[in-house]
Length: 420
Image (cartoon, rainbow, N blue to C red; front, side):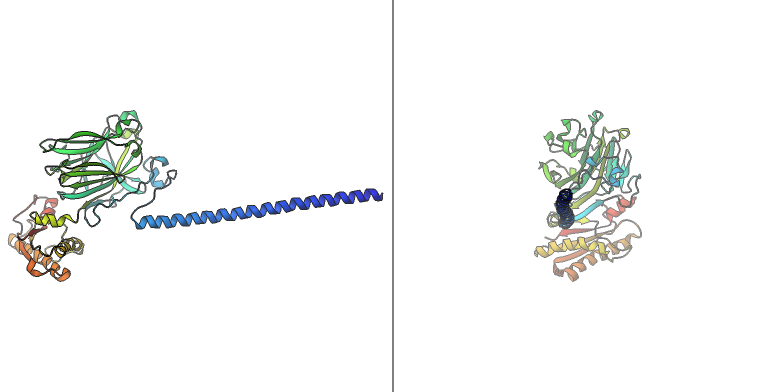
């Protein structure tokens, strides 16, 4: 009996020892699991903070990192696109960091579904949301122009092209492009040049850029330049077109693809058209443009003055007054900087008005406005008054039709000429 009790006691002690070992192992596993949980949380928070810091660095440099291609926002879904087709592209290359913005369009004033207020077309279109931004969706076989005047000799045109659902064979004849011409029209220019490419992602035909000039032009070009556009479709792609007189350079996602020294001879860079052909809205083909900006080269002001002068509509005054609007100071100071840098330069400042009102009063007003600009140079920028002259031409030298609001806006200008 004692032996049986002894054996039972030994067995119970063995079980207790085994349980103690199991509990000890479980405790160690629990401790390790807790450590791993803490580590994962720390890694997650560290990664989050690192991403936030990187975002701040990119934003400070004017660039945003690409979104995860697997993420989809509500705005992206509104275009009918899948998440794989809407990765953000780094945009905003600054070719003229000191330049003046001639035209900028983010469609802030336009409602979804409407055609934008500052554009014209022969085919229609609508504002959509893409990548969180408003964009102009172009309709098939349409031409689109902005309500800008004659563009300067040197400028950078930048925009994002957003595309989706472009895999179908029915797109074999499709094309997106930009026309350059010396006339403002919704029709194909009589003389012009174009940059274009196919939108058929399902074929390698899109892997070439088309450049062509036609009509009465000094330089005839018709060529296909190899470039892999296939990877740039069904996503958002940033284009920059830099015009320097007759020279055209084209950058795709900041990669230079075209550099043609005399492609835009005969003032073909004066006006631009966007055009689209060969897509089908029933197939939900999406071709849209957003974040458009035209920047004039700031450094070109000096050469323009020396070559015979230039005029600008970016110096504005209160109605019927010679009081300069504050939004004009940036342009005046760019010209003043030229005078500061070249102390040998002397200029004549000439005011112009539209034809509204009395002709004699317009002459007086144009002269007083020119004087106001001159005094700004003297009082705010330290330019010696002996280097400056001013005149008024009133309504006598229009550059556009005074019967339209757009024409009147072009005629209200300040001109700068070098004094030799």
